[in-house]
Length: 171
Image 1 (tube, rainbow, N blue to C red):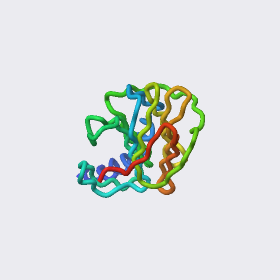
Image 2 (image 1 turned 135 degrees about the horizontal axis):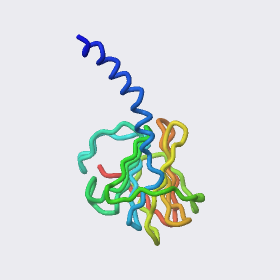
Image 3 (image 1 turned 30 degrees about the horizontal axis):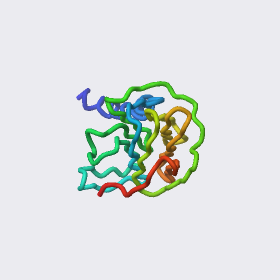
Image 4 (image 1 turned 180 degrees about the vertical axis):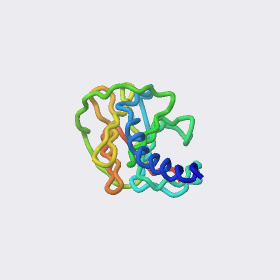
């Protein structure tokens, strides 16, 4: 009988504490040993993507992979979404954020696309809370390759047109 009375309180505590716990785990920087990356930008989420086995994810998000034909593994580097959930690959290290500038030769999109960027050095991904969402900045040294703002509504990705190429996402 007591357990039945305590269960709603335990569930309520879990619901109230879950957002704080999820947002507390946002890493400052994710450092991967790859000098190129493909970001799959899903500003409105997506339905099931049968060609690569992606489940339906309705939350605006991005996924970062080493370039190649393999989705979702073994090329996976980083997942981040508008609910502030971040999942870096185990092959990447977690580090401290570094100051970055703006995106040169910038172009901004707010539609679903795959953007592949190449850099002369390993690309790091800085993750910060932005209002009610998340911002991910990809850079190698002082050069910024893309900046993605993930929000429930109005997500956008700004990329460097000289260093990045745009393509369709997998189907």
